[in-house]
Length: 213
Image (cartoon, rainbow, N blue to C red):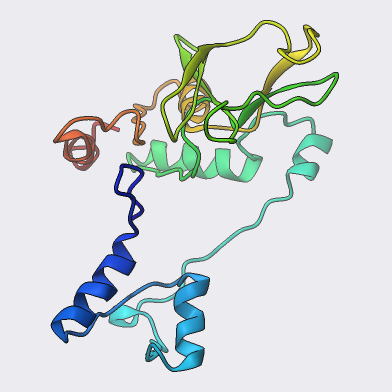
């Protein structure tokens, strides 16, 4: 966890420093350790302990990699591959649930001009603004760092071209497309925009556990 508020801090580094002050030990657990943490294990500053098997003797999940270029060649222009669509449909028919993971909130990845290539960015944070939608239409762009927000531009702010649009996928778009592709399914979206408030996460998790999605 890295706090964006002042004073800014990294929770892992705070824990390490607190442990040094108190003479305590810190146990960092991750299947994907950071480069810094991994480097410390090579210098001897950290002691590396490896798990050679999964907890409880569980087996690795089966992973299928789908080449979306082949989907396009087969005239499938959906964000869902034919294989994924079929598997979701089977689970729905059995009354089971499906979780789709995407590490990008908002409607899309960014907004860019097709003529000059300009990416609409935050004037304060040097990052691209993220498109957000209302009623299925992109209405505004927001910086996920400082909260700076502007209406969705109709022309490129750099060259004035009208050929400006969204690129990439966000959780809002996946939610809309899932509801459209599987009209009988109940869809819940869980991201920073839907879990505001003290019990935001618990509310959605309870709905999912109760079979409401």
